[in-house]
Length: 563
Image 1: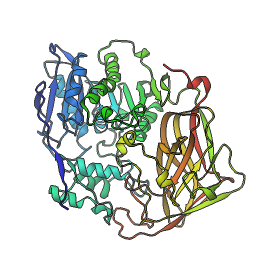
Image 2 (image 1 turned 120 degrees about the horizontal axis):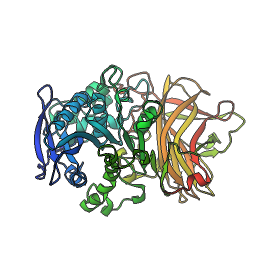
Image 3 (image 1 turned 90 degrees about the vertical axis):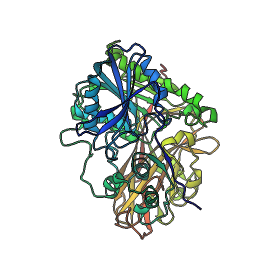
Image 4 (image 1 turned 135 degrees about the horizontal axis):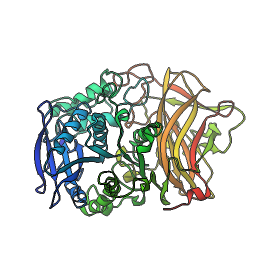
């Protein structure tokens, strides 16, 4: 069968925009589209810096532009360095601070600019906002980073965590050169570091970012931020953190939000809006997604989506860029409780939230079928345990094909939960709704015959028909061998109503492939290992150090205040 290699070239320029090649301090020119209202005057600007083609349908910037210009903003969209029409080397992260600063400076010198700029955008073009904050340019007055984080490279060191393979996959397909490529990856290749090599040979070059940041040895820290230049230290402007409860990048977003709220000098600048969406903006209310609601393929669906994406940012910018409205009236937290609607709160988790602890029990049944053991309200007094085999030659398959589109798929987990190397603990069906509103953490007492192990943990909503769908997930690398020492696994946050008749399920495994880098069962680098070894893993329940799940929940009136 011939090798299938597809690629995305720059889409045609939008005739409503003026493209300018903006020179950076080193002479590299970045392709920049400027959209202005019919009567421009001196306007505040909203800047978007992205690597996915400023003219392409995937990020729909030409379709978004009227949302901003009709509100009285100049809309400036730029291909970052080394991507599509922009010049320079193709490598993410390392130039964004300086390039963000120089682009902001260029905007302030334009005849249509009043010198005030906000930034907006998703994912990597949320990261470029944080980089611009680190540049400390005085023109930047507010940012709205959506489904993003300040440090996507924090989870690439296999010695300390369980790396996301989809980050490596992303770099290989999006950052090899100025284009975007779609090519098959042979995940059966060993060593795993060679999985992308056939694709690179057809492109004619390797991905420098993959080699430097994932496969190679690199210094600790983010290559974008030099010592003393982290955006958290530089931040002096309001931030609207925009997140989705089903977004795979949610842990990065919420870590940023929590870290800044914990700093007395920064807490007053933080705002949060959280919807029941995934990374690609599919909504829980649309599931299962029908063709007419698929904005990735249907233009009418995309047109319906755009105002929902921009309205929170435009309202925020009206207050903080134009001075229209009272900053004190802007909700600190606006969040959607899945299946129940929108709420406002002065903080996150919302007032009235409490911890609910659930305990795995009956471990002998945990790997005997999808339902497995019991998720109980109290721990067993006696210590008990279950053992399973982690075999790197027989990895637990990932149920999601595309982790960025969880709600477009939202698969039933039962097929993998029937395996003997997956543990499940299921609670009783609920008589009343249970509102989850805050962080979720699993504390697991585990051990292994190997010197370390991976823990891949999911919290599931079990529907009355038996189907089980993931609400949250987390992963951790546990050093061993030991047992009865609790290992913390953070499953990030959610806002979700578990409905009457549904149950909660805790799902524990040692692999989730190919979403996460598999453990070879030895001390070798998983990227370069050519052999593997099966080993025995143990989970302990009950007793002095009982494994448990910590949920954040709302009760009664606290949960029912719709806004």
